[in-house]
Amino acid sequence: MTTPSDDLRTTPLTAPLGAVVPSSVPTHWYNLAADLPEPCPPALHPGTREPLGPEDLAPLFPMALIAQEVSTERWIEIPQAVREVYALWRPAPLVRALRLERALGTPARIYYKYEGVSPAGSHKPNTAVAQAYYNAVEGVTKLTTETGAGQWGASLALASALFGLECEVWQVRASYDSKPYRRMQMETYGATCHPSPSDLTAAGRAFLAQDPDTTGSLGMAISEAVEVAVGDPHTHYALGSVLNHVLLHQTVIGQEALAQLDALGETADVLFGCAGGGSNLGGLSFPFIGRNLREGTTTRVVACEPAACPSLTQGEYRYDFGDVAGLTPLLKMHTLGKDFVPPPIHAGGLRYHGMAPMVSHAKELGLLEAIAVEQDAAFAAGIEFARTEGIIPAPESTHAVAGALAHARAATTDEVIVIGLSGNGVLDLPAYHEFL
Image (cartoon, rainbow, N blue to C red; front, top):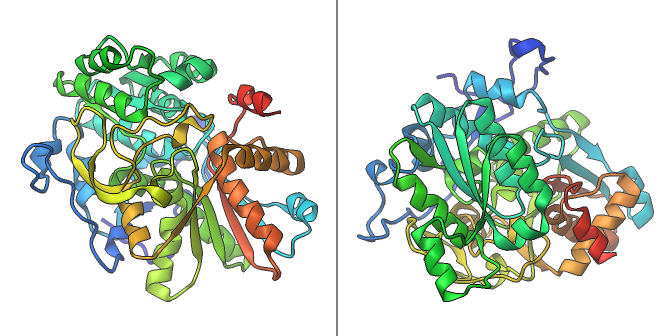
């Protein structure tokens, strides 16, 4: 396997199916574990409480992803088939927000890395495509998953269609009811989508028996998807955030942003990313944190989470289950507790009770910081961004926009601010309408 330097390495691709392929699709994913001053605490078996081995994860994930989950290699090569799909929308644009700067009257220079250009409308396909590919190679025929707002469910549905897999999704009831177009998007790609909790699984029936009117949670939906996956040898489970291999795949975002800023002669002073499970934030920030650790740069990273689900700012850093039923491994993370059921906020993708172990560990090491953003402030920022830059951000992304706008308004120097705009909000317009 070839090994790139610490700078982004790109090579041309052979154009698939007549596509025009840019020459700057990353060739490798970046693994922050290689540069951390202290290793991330291991995941534990839910029964024995001992560190997990590969055989413990085999019922859920293909061996290639299990190897990536525990890898400490700095660079992991991206398969050609995955890069060819990436080339449908990558590299994603890095845009100078000149109109927003003028509206704010700030001396800061604001850039946003826009992931809404993907076919599914968000950053989620960066890992969905990789996970579908590795499962297809291993002979799996079906994937199950959970989703909140539906960005992840739609992305896995797309990736499953591209690699010939069946896809079954459990969507948090609050979002299933309030965001019907994302469900339609999944079904258009060929997936089946159920509200969670459902009566299709033992876990779902138990949740409904306890509270028939529950609005659901990602922890509940994970329990249902995992239960179905472990009961069928031809089915695997796919997760859209939290785990190391998921954040690994998302680092194409930060690698591109670094290269794009370098090409402009710019250095990021501060990054703002929305934080729910951690995939968008980690994908954008980990390459910058890695450069900080290796080269002594000083880019600040600010995680912007919803005040209604504040795992980083108010949660405990401890081992906890990733799901409500306790079927998943124990992860050391910032958590509000597996039984936490957040209010049905519009940013459904940020309603997870815990934070990615790697993001949590980075915060404990002082490599990033976190703020909590109220929903009204987030939507107000999203509207201000839409009316200056033209893009309607996904409700999740508005939290990062809000953090950046507050920082830019207080800026007194021409510092460089980078916003991770994780997706578009064109299927979230009812939420904007309600706010207005």
